[in-house]
Amino acid sequence: MRILRFALLLPLFLVVILTLHAQDKSVRPGINKPFEDPKINVKEFIAKFEGESREIFAKRKQIVEACQLKAGMAVADVGAGTGLFTRLFAASVGETGKVYAVDIAPKFVKYIEETCAQSGIKNVQGVVCKPTSVELPENSVDLVFICDTYHHFEFPFKTMASIHRALRPGGKVVVIDFHRIEGKSRDWVLKHVRAGQETVVKEIISCGFKQIGEEKFLEENYLVRFEKVNETK
Image (tube, rainbow, N blue to C red):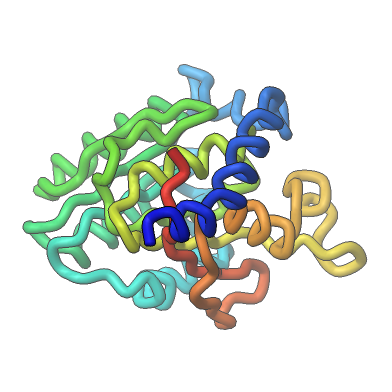
């Protein structure tokens, strides 16, 4: 039985290994440099990230509901930015749960930690990630949330592999990103966003996940759910 199981998993294992080796170079060099700048103005990004004109802010309640969170869950908000969803998730998982606010920008992480402490939110922990890893402990989270951030992954396969390791068995991933459609999407999206939904889904599946759902209430963005299905180590 074990031999049969290994034989079934071997093709996926080989795909992941080959994919990771192909990730020696960044797919979008320098895309995150502005966020790593120690002089970054957090207030400017609060206005940008948390304004009603931004679709995911306007639909934030529906997005949180789509994540299907429960009290006591451990959640990673990857690309947490100014903490919009981090704070909402903290309330959803309650005192017995935990939220990791993960971002490549140290000033964003510091801002989230400080504002949560000021608000009496005690179940949030900040994590400064690397271009190749979310820097979370193995088997530490039940759900990873990636909102308008996947297109900022310079090393998407290595980053998703680190997410795979961080997820507990059967853990979930919720990905929201911009539709990238030639002739339909705005020019800045076509220039800034590397790949469309179909490519993103294929990349994530190749890293040991399966698609388990999709929501249609967003227009500029798509929301897709995944589940961890295999070990990649």
